[in-house]
Image (cartoon, rainbow, N blue to C red; front, side):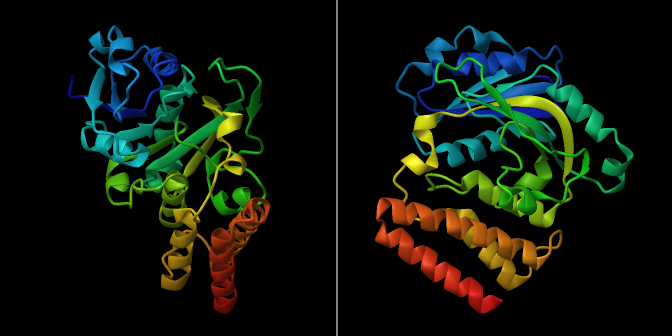
Length: 291
């Protein structure tokens, strides 16, 4: 692998041999050599390595295997083996557009990004709802403005996921100094990292579309059994208490928590889940006492 690597794509995968080839090829369609693709096989049992064997001959691609440990461990393991200055985490059933790195280059060239030493930036994205992996029925994220991005918590409160893995680029030193992706979590591990970045770092947003996120309807949160609150809630609580939120105001964190609690309260009532209901109630009372 050449040493002049600017970007590292890290793709964790578990039993997605039917979709990962399209994911990898969407990255390799970028005709340049200043990036690498690190595939972290999280103990797949579907012959993932055999299915992608032809792709592994590309010098830009590295294949790593680990015992099944979860997506967070796989992502963090990929970062430890990365050589690029910037990291892009990509799920193995999503797709990027051919212009992604060109858009990231253009962001890095902007005066405001240099002036503020911005090391976290993201582009616009689209959802697509198609279980065979074809990028059809695209639903774009709306109302994203180009520039320094301060609306993470407001966007979330208004019902928009601010950004997703695959459209976010993180300077490696910032990621290494963060809490990274939290292990032993079944969901919400990426949202907790986004909270860290929104509270601690300047972020730049581009309205260019460079990413397609595959949304499987059967995997939606409302159809899962959820027994505990996601880690971003505890993260925001801690930041409210400690005052560690230099890029955002306290009221934004409180409003974010209210929105999260309402969502999980509805879920607890729907599933008649007393344990989750108790956690929501305890957390919301704690939030009220801090006001």
